[in-house]
Image 1 (spheres, rainbow, N blue to C red):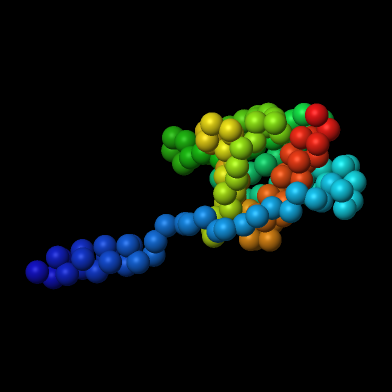
Image 2: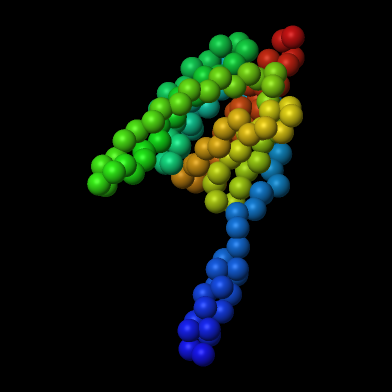
Length: 146
């Protein structure tokens, strides 16, 4: 009887904690017009380099059409030895479909077909919103050029 009560108590606490939910947020697409293209790229790079593990951003490069993001992830190996994997993703501004900012400071990027392109964990909610602002501003700038 006692173990059943503990089990239901644990399940109630786990269910009450809930999952992360998207926060309604509309990005400011006019940052490039307010400052400069190079300043917006530098701010985007700064915010991404402040990301947190598990997929910590190690470098960011820009061209007119895309952004290349390199992430480093630490894994636990055999006998508690860690190893790193590095990934590189090219995010074409023309293929960015939507973003989701979550209440746990994650930002998910999706392409036009709703396939997940990138997920980044930020340390603060301000960084998560700032990343969405800067990236969508770069996207809008690229769309206006074409």
